[in-house]
Length: 138
Image (cartoon, rainbow, N blue to C red; front, side):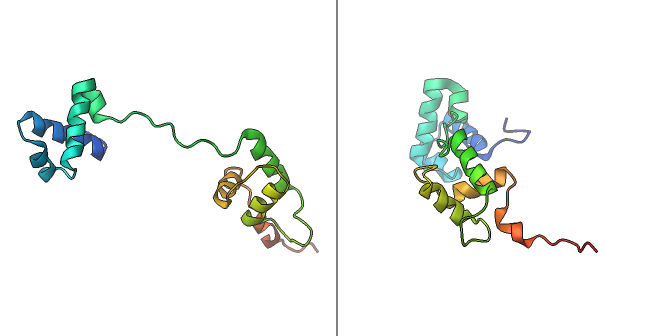
């Protein structure tokens, strides 16, 4: 692993730490060559003793953040954006979509960034609708 191929930096540093610990160096001395604290190196050693090399070198998959919007919420917001903007507005903006989604009780709360990512994933750019340049016909 250490002699060839492309590996993640964390994995290589953990392997180096384990090698140095195996050579008899203490955790504080290993932390002088590897950019981690002695406690982190002890944790790697503990994980090695408990679960073997795989457990020491690699992290468990993390669950990630829960989805803020369900599929039906996304569909309702997309349908709202595809309709006409509110009275007095020329076009939808990300802020306006977020405000209207909460006002119309489509979702209890939603942030601008969540709306921006949702619109981007559907390749919608309602704020650019009025900026389309069309050639003359005639």
